[in-house]
Image (cartoon, rainbow, N blue to C red; front, side):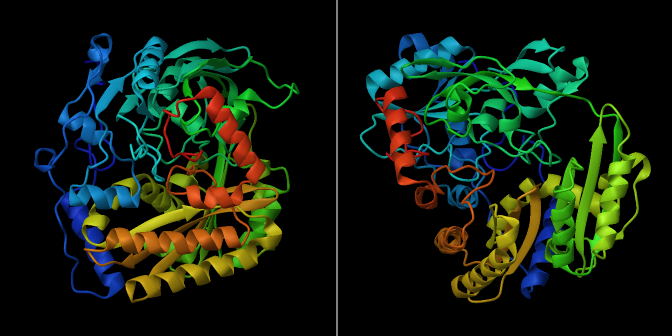
Length: 534
């Protein structure tokens, strides 16, 4: 068997030894107990790997694939779930009923082809697995149908920067490489992709492309779409390899077909990615507003002024308070500018002038443009990095704590925001029997509208967390679609968003996707139930 030497934990975020300390967990639970007005929160223990009941594998790999395959307990457990709230609830219960029968590690494109051939011959579902960071049920082998078994195809062995074109500022990179390793491979060339999803630590390049990820600190270059120059993808019926070009008007783009395909059409083994010179000039600041509507107006004007900030983020008072900083009254706007060629002070100055026009008060520039690392922005940055580690103890304490994100045009935002707040707060009261909490931030901003990101939390019943979460998820997702937003801006569709994705996409588009699926994957073995109906 071939696998990666350093394996992420089977339950939780990151690697063994990461996560919150016992003191941090106690402080976190004490804070939430105070917010919900209870003396203390009970805290269940997650089962150890050896305590979990796991069914025997229904299938066995052929002799030719045994060197790259595993039926080891830990390997199967760690490839069952992603990082969503319901994933953690089921892990807490020790429910691993959908564990893959076999985990296969691809160390070459030939390995991918061999696994797909085996799957098509034996009617096995293949779940592409990169960072395992899906928060929408994108990697769980919830396969249904008449499949004989499920194989989780781990692609993290495809982890090399293969070729660098410094003149064109591009690189050919394998799809299984994780974010930090990719940036480390580009650093000697003084290049960077500057695409940082919150899952960056574990996320793989192929996963970013397949889920159409959005990077933070990237208002100008937002989605992974902006960086893809060429894609190579293995499907059950052959290889799709687009031509490497800076742009093309030759019909519908094959790259665009694969960006956001979520492993349902093929497996992205490598791609040429557009890069940037590493920034050397920076400027940043944090601006406080008494009214959120004024902050929104300032952000809209900045986004339409062709100033191209690297970061333009809004945090409402609740978002600041929930993360332990700010006065709970001010809306915070984080500004960041960067460039590798010239100073950016004039652009930053103009952005601050726009903020001042709308009543914004700068908190104070950081030394050498690092305000995003100090003050309120620095506190938020620290909280943002630590957030993935908070889910595990919160679920164990019976707190329903989740997020949803969308996008809407500026002309509809005010009404949209009001309707989303009404629907979310009403659902929290109805489902949990008490008031909950909700906060808003903008993770990404466009000239024609923002991408609001909402956090909601309520005190759940320990024996009904999954059901209560499901009711809340339906309520907020219905509200998003009914009020004209997208069901997902950068979290992908997965299985969790399929009911609303079907409502959002045109019927003929859905039929066309089905036809593409039937052509590329006639046996339907790739990630069944994701993106395309079973």
